[in-house]
Length: 280
Ligand SMILES: Nc1ncnc2c1ncn2[C@@H]1O[C@H](COP(=O)(O)OP(=O)(O)OP(=O)(O)O)[C@@H](O)[C@H]1O
Ligand SMILES: [Mg+2]
Figure 1 (tube, rainbow, N blue to C red):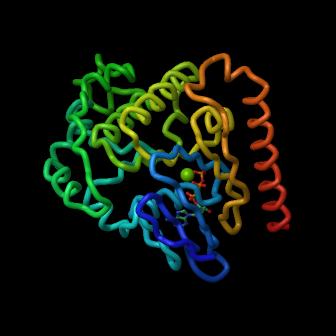
Figure 2 (cartoon, helix red, strand yellow):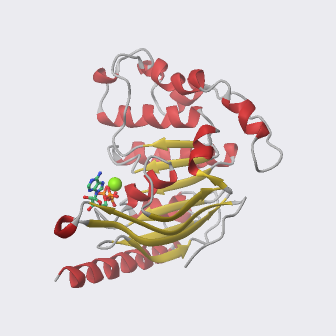
């Protein structure tokens, strides 16, 4: 299937990506079609190795598809990258070890000072310049205010993850790609950061593509959950999460919430079964 490009969506159309050759070839993406609407919060969930990070890297323009197409609001990924429209929180936080937390998180906005201007002239109509982000406020919100002058080596894994998240938010990207950003956090910090992410998403009207292994997290955060299966990496189900926002404590305990969790777990189990059958 070939999906048309859209000025209002990230479109992944019949995307194929294979690593290696011959017997050692791994089909990381075997014909993926997805359309993510502007402003939407979409999570991707699926077994390890099913191509979730590959899909994010394709959208981020860090890797090319072998065949098929990826477009960001009607732009080629290279152009979207040039216009600094994309922020990526990678699976492994990549902070510069010689810079303090504060210098790490402010670096992209220093480098990209000219980007706003380019975005205003970019394709896609009128662009309103966002107010500069209050980086100190963000550091405070994620509990890193006291660590602002520390080096990455002095931080725990979870603190590094949080610094990486602040850095991505600081750019105010149109598209925020997050690869298991909360995986190294304890449960309470994770829940607090989920809430903060939702606030920031709402305030900045960003489009978020969020990879997770955690079903509850996917249901709490998302407008839609994409379930992937492996060998070849592909989308096996898409589930609209029709729950009101904000998704408070009461809602998380509700039957409707648990029904969505059960449904997605069931879809994941099907993806696993298909995977095992293909491997047998
Ligand atoms: N650079 C690479 N070279 C070779 N194989 C790769 C490369 N990157 C990914 N792969 C393979 O492609 C498949 C998909 O990898 P990917 O990292 O996208 O999976 P994932 O769904 O993000 O997994 P996880 O949940 O463990 O992070 C895996 O089989 C992986 O081994
Ligand atoms: Mg991954």
